[in-house]
Image (tube, rainbow, N blue to C red; front, side, top):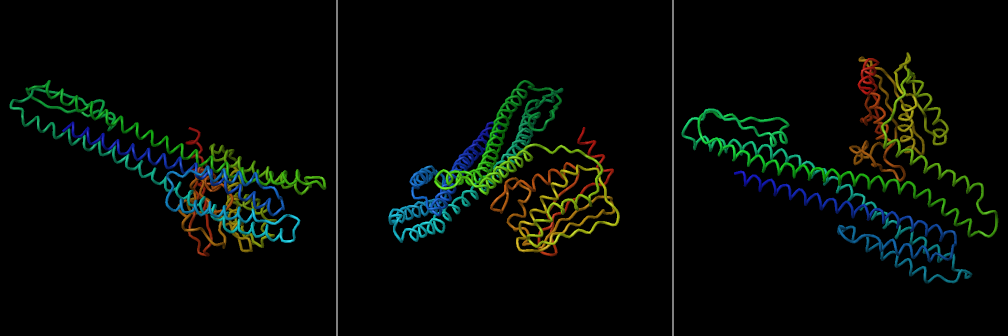
Length: 475
């Protein structure tokens, strides 16, 4: 029985290890493919910009794009990815054929031929690259889901080992009892190592009477050693799965950092290249320098968001009027809202609602939620914040709008890192906002809106609960 149990556990551990190794390999290949696809997309955009600016010599970019295509991994690709990759390569070859047939720059048809080449690039090649990026990103998400499934299987496996080992012990004890003809005086056998690993306690088997104590003790010790070895192997596999999951998260974060920093750098690079190729004028104009400054500020903001995500918020609590925080937030947004024709709505409560909070961080949460609403209201609408105190003394703020609402596919992933359906952004704003609210002892959630738009509800605890939460956090 013990040998059968050991074989069963070893087979289960080996199977889980193989699944973990396959998923890790798939994640690594997918991350490499995503990085290579991002680099290819940036190169194609650079090429289209230079062609529009009538830069005749783009051979270096052509070579770089060919290199980007060669760097795309071919292993572990799905059939859809392979089809897209072939379509992407064929599209770029067609573009190069059109480019090679361009007339001399001095001829009358040169501009129209260049425009046709650019149109083919932007309408065929670049969309194919973006489609490949999206498909690769979806496959990375699927690999993460497979990770979660392996972890669940591992947890069930450890539980099964505990149950089966307990049943095996009972069956062995029953078989020994049937074979014993004389009554045992008393025998105590402690399964220390195995019980400690499986149940975090010490289980004791007590048999009374006379009999072959040494034989029973030997069998139980053998069973203990075998089960202990298998459990230790399962725990090592669990640690390996967790480490691979952490590596995948680091890779995803690195991809996000690279994407958010590469775009501003591309704009700066294009301005500098244009200035170097310009023989007339001062080079970089004040407008160009303003763009450079904006892009540098954008990179700084992206890095600050990653720092806020990586470290827990430190609260500096003091008494603050929540209604005043809402008013200050709307004052910061009033100019942008006026340009977009968005009506800002807030009716202060009859009496001030004050709480001991960190005003700066709470204002950051309100500002983030309000900016999300403004981004989906480019052509007008309304943005509303409601503030009230319920019967239990908790403060409740609702931020709602009459925009298109939350995409159902994103509803369950709103507060997960790096989840965003916007073309720009890191997908960390709501994650950081919820963390700040939870540090205050409150909650932040997305709730259905009767108007069909988005609605986020923030709840802050009553003053007594805030004090208790602050004491617990300090302890």
